[in-house]
Length: 112
Length: 114
Image (cartoon, rainbow over all chains, first blue to last red; front, side):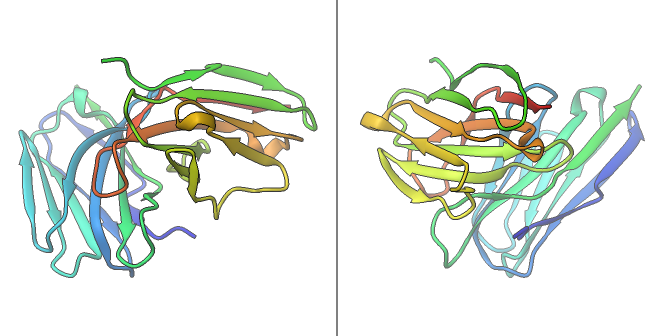
């Protein structure tokens, strides 16, 4: 069962543009994580959000956890080619223990 | 500090054959995960171990997949017999616990079933 819906599935933009990707669910989560995966590599953690309404910034990346802890967004300002990759959200459900479930990901391509 | 080690990196087999993947987690990490990632999709959890006990194997196709983590350190994932739809990257990850902690992933083992 896919608990997490990510959109858009694919995104191709030029260097310098801004973008937002979304992670939505009907379930409530105890925490949510964003990972980035490059070809031939495993995912690498970018951020963990725990509190509803929480906003975290990591250089040009801004992460927000929804007030109801059911959704999250990732905004990238002035995208660079080095931002290219697969962005995955992952979450643990509030009532079902510790299994970390991933969305299908957003594949981002930033061209010079 | 050494990362999560996986082998082999690539494996090609014919359907109905068997295959085994090995994972050595980061030293001291109690929790170990096996994920299956089909091309174009996010990782799907197959099994989660806490030390040498199984925490979650609800999505493991137990008629053909098996996994063990003897002595609570390294782990093996076996597929027997393999099907065409098992073609995927098998990712191993480890973490210090089962809370909000970071998962550290290996580079994965890419399986092609012909």
